[in-house]
Amino acid sequence: AKEDSQNNGFCWACEKANFRCNVARTPEAALECFKEKHHDLVIIDHRHSRYFDAESLCREVLLIYFYLNGFVDLFGVCCCRPDREEASVMPLIKSGFNRRYVENANMMACYNELLQLERGEVLAQFKLRACNAIFTALEQSQEAIEITNEDQVIQVDIQSSKHKDRRKGSLDVRSTTSRGSDGSSQRRHSSMARIHSMTIEAPITKVINIINAAQESSPMPVAEALDRVLEILRTTELYSPQLGTKEEDPHTNDLVGGLMTDGLRRLSGNEYIFAAKQPHLPSHLAMPLSLNDIPPHVAQTMENEDSWDFDIFNLETACLKRPLTYLGLKIFSRFGVCEFLSCPEATLRSWLQGIEANYHSTNSYHNSSHAADVLHATAYFLCKERVKQSLEQIDEVAALIAATVHDVDHPGRTNSFLCNAGSELAILYNDTAVLESHHAALAFQITTRDDKCNIFRNMERNEYRTLRQAIIDMVLATEMTKHFEHVNKFVNSINKPLAALEENGSVKGILTSPDNRILVKRMLIKCADISNPCRPLELCIEWAGRISEEYFAQTDEEKRQSLPVVMPVFDRNTCSIPKSQISFIDYFITDMFDAWDAFADLPNLMQHLDNNFKYWKGLDERKLHSLRPPPE
Image 1 (cartoon, rainbow, N blue to C red):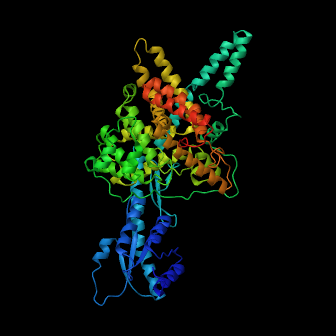
Image 2: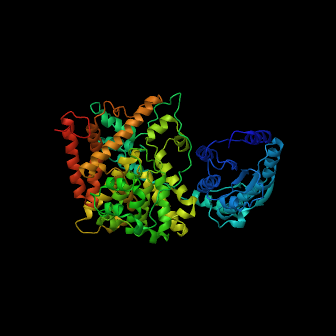
C-alpha cells in the first residue's frame, strides 16, 4: 500500500475495531509478512498498478495460504480507483479477490467496510472452517465431542457410542473422555480386571530371578561374578558402551560429545531461539513431468546411478543443486514405488519437489545433495542379496522414503547446539532426538497437507500405518546417541546367530523375523547416512570438507551467541581435518561397516574405506591440517 490518506484511513479503522494490522510497501515485503503472520484479511492497493501486478500478488498470497493450510478460505479485498464507467469485477474474482473497495479515504467509510466484512463474509469463512474441523473430528474421533459457540456455550454434545467403531484421530475439536457411554466404561473395567489377573513379568526380570536362584547354590567366586552381572543388567543402556575419555585424543572426545550426547551443559543468558517456520513452498524451477522429460545432460549423469562409485556431485552441478528430485524419480521408478503406493508419477514428482524445497541449500553438508547421496546408498544396499532375502517390498519402500526425508529442514546445527540454545525444536521434543523427531514429523506434514503431493493417499489404512511406523523408526535410527546400541543389537541378534547357523544353511528364520527385519532396516539407513568414508577418495574428500565447514560454522555461531562450544576442535583456524576424519572412522565407522560387510558382502566399500583411512593417516603424519597436500 502507498502511504497516503487511504492507507491512513484503513489503519485508523483497524485500530478502532481492535484488529491487528500490518502494512507492507512492496510485494516482497507483503509476502514475507503474510508467511509470518497468516492474516485472515488481505487488502491490496490496486490504484498504482504500474508499480506492481496486484492480481499476481493476490494469486501468490493464495498459493502460500493453500500450501500452509491445505485449503483456501482467505478473504482478499482489492482497493481501486473509481472508474468513469463501471468495469466488470470478473478479472479480480478470477485472480482470487473476494471484494472490490472503491477508493474512499473517509475514516468512517473504512471502518464501516471492515465491520461489514467481519460480520459478513469473514464470519462465514470462519464458520466454514469450523464445519470442516467438525467433519474431520466426527470422522476420526471415537470419543465424545462437544461443540461450543464463541461464548463457550455447548451447542451440540455427541456421545462416543454413536461412532465408537471409528479410529481415534489426531484432530480434536473439543473432546472429553469423561462422558463415555456405560458400555465403554464396562469394557474398560473388564479389561483392567483381566490385566490385573495376569502375571506381569518382563524378560529382564525373569533373567534376574534365574541368576538370583543360581547364586544360592554357587561358590563364592561365581556368586560375586553374578553380582557384577546383576549390576550391569540393572543399567538402562545395555547395548550402549560406557564412553571413557581419551585425554590424548580431543577429536574423538569432541565427536562423541557433539554427536552422541544432547550436550545440555548450560544455558546462556541470551538463548539462541530458532524462529518457528512453516514449510517452504516448492521451487518454481522447471522440473520434469516424468522420467522421460529429464534433460539429456542430467540423465547422462545418472546413467550409472546403480553403481557405488556414482558421482553425486556431477548430478548436483548438472541440476543446479537440486539432485534429490531427479535421482528420486529414477530410483523410485526402478523399485516400483509408485506401483506399490498406487500413486501417479506426477504425485511422486510433486512430493519429491516439496521435500527437496525444505532442505536448506545454504547448508554446506546437510542439504538435498546429502539426502540424494543417502538415497543412493540405500538403493545400493537394498540390491544386495542378503538384504533382499531379509526385507519385503514394504520395507524397501519405507527405506527409500526414509532416506529421502531423513534430514528434511535440517538447520545445519547439531542436536547439542539446539539444546544448549534452548531452541523451539528442543523445547518441543524435550531435548531428545530433537532433529530426527522434527525430520520425521515434518515429512508427514508436508506429505499429507496437499493431495497433489500425498503419495500415501491411495493406501489401505493398515498398510499405511505399517509403512508410516517403519519410516519413522528408520529416521529416528539415524540419531547418533543410539549408534552403538543399534550396531551391537545387529551383531548379537543377526550376525552372530547367522555365523553359527551358516554351516547347515538354515538362516531364513533369522533373516525374516519381524524384529530382525527392523534391525536390518536400522543398520541399513545408518550405514547409508554416514557412508562418506566408504566412497571413492575424491567423493570422500569433498564430503569431509563440507561437514567440516558446517561444524566450523556452528562453532562460530556458538562463540557469537555465548553458547557452550560443543566441539572445540572444530575451530576453522586450528582444526586438523585429517585428525577429525581418522577419529570418526576409528570410533564410528570401522566396526559398523565390518558388521554390515559381514552381512551384506561389500568388499568394494571396505577397500575404499581402507584407502581413505590411509590417505588421512598420511596427511596427519605429515602434520597437515588441510583436505589435500600442497601442490608439489
